[in-house]
Length: 402
Picture 1: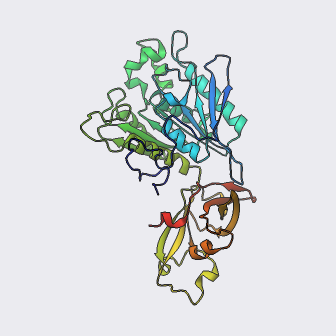
Picture 2 (picture 1 turned 120 degrees about the vertical axis):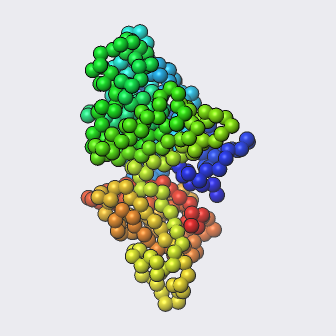
Picture 3 (picture 1 turned 180 degrees about the horizontal axis):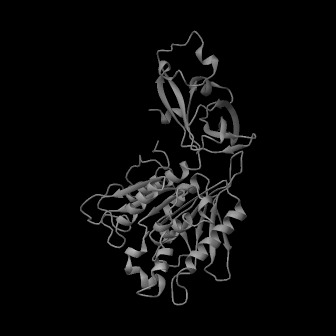
């Protein structure tokens, strides 16, 4: 089986491959995907393309990913295929996120900054109030990354974002005079206008968890833009991760074609999508094989310790990493067969990481499953009894054993 969607264990794409680690080929979308176009203003470019799939889970909570296209604040894109972030979109769609692709009025004569910011804020507010998502994340590249950071550092929008990812982002425009005339329509704009348009100067301790990605050979936006923002977030007490890619240019492709980059574009996309998903979902549940003596703290069913079992043999332990340790009381484990979800076990929470011993032989021998291999899902039960779909699904446990 290929690596987990969103993991770093990707293989190289070969010509003729139908799928990449469970992804639909670039240029196509899953058959059950639906696209809705929503206008948030009177201009034809003030619209959002919302990509979504039917939610197969018990809880119908909406998890929303917002994407702002790049292109120097002036590229008008009417379709996701035109953007370099399409792989992230596919990964998020595969895990039943709704993805909002925000179109906005581009920089041009009479449409200078802050027109673009006003459009981003209007689109964000429309999506938030209309969809009422359980969790929102955002990502973008270049000017799109500047847009996501603008939302994340704006008081009216930032506290609704759980996490963001920004690649090759202009963050401190006072250090980038090459963009002044383009963005402000003035080669020498007022200092306060430049500062107001720079996310670097608006960082706070309440800012969403942030992943910054930059190539060390970026000749358009120096990697110091992301590096300085990274340290500014940490100094304010926020959470930031910085991924510096060797030999990568502005588009994250190799600057020197004869040399490799730290991570390929597909690997960066998977790392980015995984980062965003794990900030709103339970991190991908996995199973490890351990000696029972090494997992005594794991909570498990008493019948798993019957006297006829050899406890010196490795046992299969389900690992649940929860990003919302304060909100969840316990977990429920479900399995799927013939398109129906069946309750399997209730798992008490033991902290940020919960371990649960699984008797896979007994599960697979259960008459409910017959000869099929079930798909599994972990849900989180919140205070007040609400059950939320909070993990990506995963197939037969043994495929993911260490």
